[in-house]
Length: 182
Image (cartoon, rainbow, N blue to C red; front, side, top):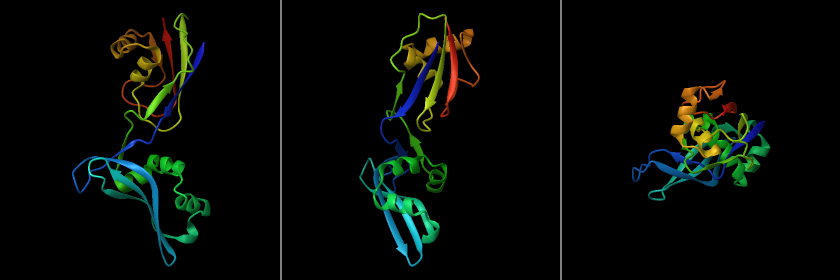
């Protein structure tokens, strides 16, 4: 029996970056963009608010780009403060590297198992799909999906009753499958 699980974001992740005003390390995306054009060059920033003091930080999206080289639909989405664009840009590795930020996905995702309960089967094949690049420990997902403790999942892994083509220790943010043998 093959089950399909999906890791779904429930809200935007927290942005990890030091605030210059209060030394807090957490920001939340405001969902608003600031766009500035100077002659033929354009800059765009995603605005983020410090969770400690409310100070605004600008995360660079576009920097000194020629206006003609920016796709018109991207400009429209920036001007419209498109919430989907906010989510896309936060997960963009180039934006993360340029702004020296990391994302904290704690309490910002849920596991959708489809509601089926197949624990009576001899072996269960599960396909886990990620709706967004959310780094999660597979052991935690498996424990949550089946209602096990993490220690029990670790024991199943050690005993060879939980197998996968990918390493289940550490964190994953890409699709994977595993088999649970009862």
